[in-house]
Structures are given as C-alpha cells and as structure tokens.
Amino acid sequence: QVQLVESGGGVVQTGGSLSLSCVASGRTFSSYAMAWFRQTPGKEREFVAGISRDGRTAYYADFVNGRFTISRDNTKNTMDLQMNSLEPGETALYYCAARQSTSSSYQGDYDYWGQGTQVTVSS
Image 1 (cartoon, helix red, strand yellow):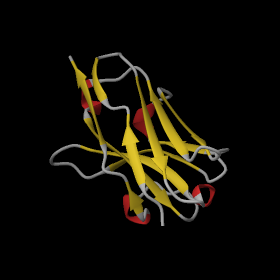
Image 2 (spheres, rainbow, N blue to C red):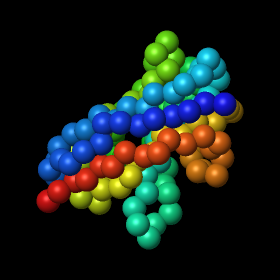
Image 3 (cartoon, rainbow, N blue to C red):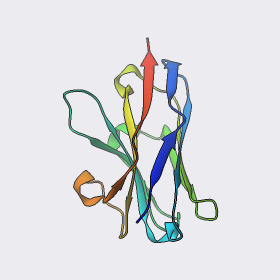
C-alpha cells in the first residue's frame, strides 16, 4: 500500500518550464516502479514518463522529444518531472502512478494513483 500526492503544477507561458513532484507514503517506495501520466477532457489518460525502481532507467513518450527529465530519490520517497519548452497542447492534469513491478507505459498496469496536479500552458 502506498499513497501518492502530486504538486508543482501551475500556469506557464509557451516555452516555459515547470517541475512536478510526487511524494509517497509507506516504507517500501523503492519496490515500486513509478510513472507520470496526463489527461485532458475527452482524451484517454496517456503515458508521459516512467522510471525503474532503482531510478537508473527512464522511459519517455515520443512527444517528450528530449524536453523532460524524470527522476526519483528513494531516500526521500519522492519522484520529480522537470518539464521544459512547454507547449499549449501539454495542458492537462498530470498524475503520479506506482506499480510494484517493472515499468510500464500502460495506465491499466498501475495500481496506485495520486489526485493529479494541473498544468496549464498559455499562448
């Protein structure tokens, strides 16, 4: 069992940057693969980035195109997503997710979710 809370969302101009954070409760954070997903009205929740349990392997959706960096600190039970060069199409509710297994890009594979943090990119 793990509880997740996201923070760091806000409003930025096109081309700006934001850093999102996810803090997890529990004593076994390092046993969970983690990921960020996002969702806009009328669209399916989509994978953004994932990271392995030890933090040594990261995975990104094609649209990231080198602009984002996912990281985690297992000593602090935190996971972050640094986002640069943001575009209006990336306006969405961003979710932190956890899975007590290897990384996956499919939202149905994740067992635990935060409440989401809103990112709005204005033009």
